[in-house]
Length: 275
Image (cartoon, rainbow, N blue to C red; front, side, top):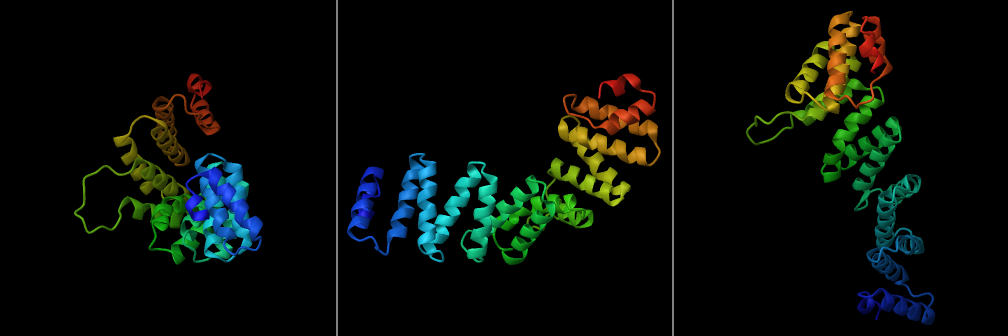
């Protein structure tokens, strides 16, 4: 009766009440609640859907229905921007279903969340778990850029460099293409080299970026990073030139105090005042 009624939320609710009233211990109540949650989602009743999924996952916490309901809760909380709740539910899902159908995707999303919240070490831990346990999944492939960013943010530029290089030059059975390298990866690779103290390779990556993309926020950041590198090498004139180019590449981009400082120290008072 319930299965036949799940095309309509009103009918499904009536069937659910009728069945559970007649038999409160009905063993498929979790299945009914899960189906109710899906119908409630379709009608944009998010709070009620979450409640249905939560109750379904609690009836038998290790069941296949609980696994599906737990993932739906995580997905909905994430989409709603409720990151604290999503993190708690996601961590619980991974603990309860370590090899679950959706565990790779939950690990990837938790890693993304951790990095966005400034928890780089936690992001590295989660994404390395994904890499070691589920290297055959789409979630793993999609996580590699975030892992590289997290490694750089956590103070491991060498590991980040290796991963950025892999992403820029993926192993493929197809003939190599002449497509321009991903500018965002070039920027991150250049910054990683700069952090690691390898100015030569940093310059090479950053010059490659601005050669193909001379304006915009990425170009401005590349020019700024070049300015910092030349400043650290004692080349104030070159540093000043690159800071000016950074300002010209993206005039609306918020520039750092360092840019204003070096322009001021170089006697470029008007330019410094505009930063």
